[in-house]
Image (cartoon, helix red, strand yellow):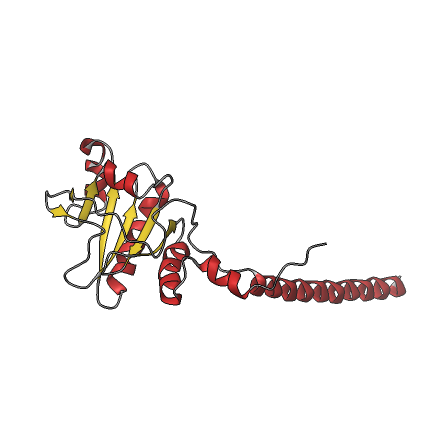
Length: 204
């Protein structure tokens, strides 16, 4: 009886050691996979205008009636972040504070223009809930069409001269911040930058 108990304890300890070794091996593999996974950037389609091109200038009115010309060169030397949203888009609501924080943290200042379209009455509660009445919130179908926005939330980063520096579908903070990373690296997108360093694929 005593011998059986000793054997069973030895087997349990051996199983525990094996399990610990397996867990350590899995942790190592997870670390390797994490290093190999490329950072996600804003999803860029074939819509225009493309990064490096001059932005279309569309004259609009913001929520308070102030006339704006998103895409025109900024006399104050600031860049512009165009952030396209919808009152029915949960991700848009989540990223609104992020867009504000990113714009506020930009060196030299960054104008944030939050844009949508549709009847004004459909946006009243959205504007109130997110305190957009005091910012540049615009309703303009021509602006949405000029940027060929099909899915939301969508962001466009312009420089002070009205040139597109980066754009794309942004579903996370990482996506939004990737626009600035692409601009700083002088590429159209993070994916393009990573593709430059990627080794050529072997064709069988």
